Image (cartoon, rainbow, N blue to C red; front, side, top):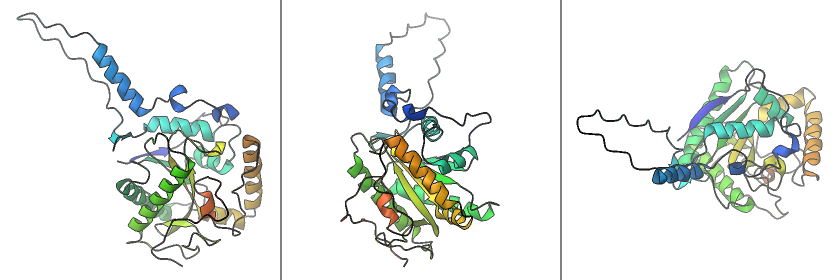
Length: 303
């Protein structure tokens, strides 16, 4: 299943958010975002506790049934898909918070250049295939965009994974990207501007021939800026970074983001590297990987 909706901030939406409190907030079910399975259980409990309906008298018109509530979030292999409105609300709260580090994400959101999908389960073959096809369509639409290099992002949210820690999320992320690539490889090549080897300093993940910097978000992330109520993958176009470098604005933006991230967390992110010095694959999942870490991704083609 895939749910697509444009992620555009409405007129008058405040630019400022909830500050650090947004990152220190309780889990989603304590902050107004009940997990889908909790909603289903609550509805079932109400149904069991309700008194039986009285039988109509002979000859009386049958009582009209009470309309059922809207459909519950669709389960996916035992894991409930997130509600799209809850995902949108959570991302707005996070990205528009006063202290959220990524100013580029704020720009993309405020300009209506953030596209959000809800897919099945992270690491599942069918979900990866659908995510790949949706991302291919996103890439194809860039050809008709009058500003193809403007800040924009593509986000995919996935079903809840109770107990998922940083290492487990990292494994699921790379399995998902591998499956996406294998589906894409039959029809698209790798971007010639980037290496397909995740050990190389100029590696970038590619779908539809377009290079992306991937950011993983999940509830158990150690970095505050990487936390989200559900597993999510954020795909940022590399071409927007290239345009910023050409305009002489990239270094300034990078410095601002790093300063804000350090202020939010209280310490610098040990995984941040300057472009072209080490592989960006080390940063995708957000876990602080050791020096000997080896990326499990294997490209089927590319240099």
